[in-house]
Amino acid sequence: MNPYGYIAVEGLIGTGKTTLARRLAQSWNAALVLEEFEDNPFLPRFYEEPQRYAFSVELSFLAQRYHQLKRVGDRNLFQPVTVADYSIGKSLVFASVTLAADEYTLFRDLYTIMYAGLPKPDLLVYLHLPMDQVRQRIRLRGRSYEQDIGEDYLDRLQRCYLDHLQKLSGARVLVVDIEGVDLLQDPSAYARIQRLIATERPVGYHIARV
Image 1 (cartoon, one colour):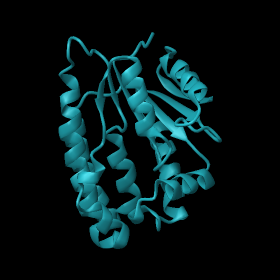
Image 2 (cartoon, one colour; image 1 turned 120 degrees about the horizontal axis):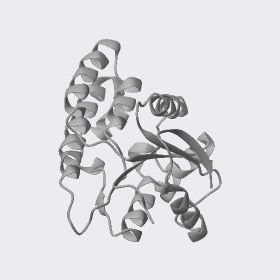
Image 3 (cartoon, helix red, strand yellow; image 1 turned 135 degrees about the vertical axis):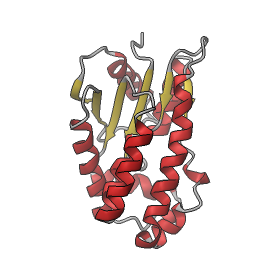
Image 4 (cartoon, helix red, strand yellow; image 1 turned 60 degrees about the vertical axis):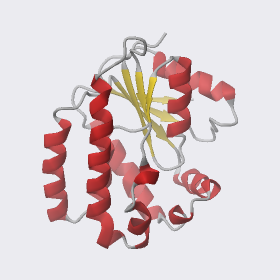
């Protein structure tokens, strides 16, 4: 049985966030919130000219995520559980890597104002993969605009994610090491992750391996 009402799944590109969120939602008859990154017109441009489009892409994602997650508070009587394949904190993590210092200060102020009114996840799950496997997953996804993403950029994102999660006050955070695990091909791996997520745990930062 799942003890949480709102679960957010995080991780780098290709770690299986959406796959896991979909399966959890199906298993628990939960409402599903998926990031609409394909609707962001700035994303392909950002990967081509990151300095020029960084603020535009981060601000547009922040607004998009805010409008989606604002609806999480209106839980349906027949779907009391919500599973999302991101949290609003993702915006702050990415902005800390992509934006110049003055832009980040402005962005953080906007984020703080908007985040204050949003429901917080009862559990935040981070799927952790070694960088070589992240790169391999990106190649397999085949999205042209992702193929030139630098490893340094991904490594910085991973470190910023983990730093952000460790500093979250009053949150339940579960970092799941999925090295060598393919959620699409290994049903038993999903069952193990589901059991990990469904285990009630105290507030704090927890690490587990599948």
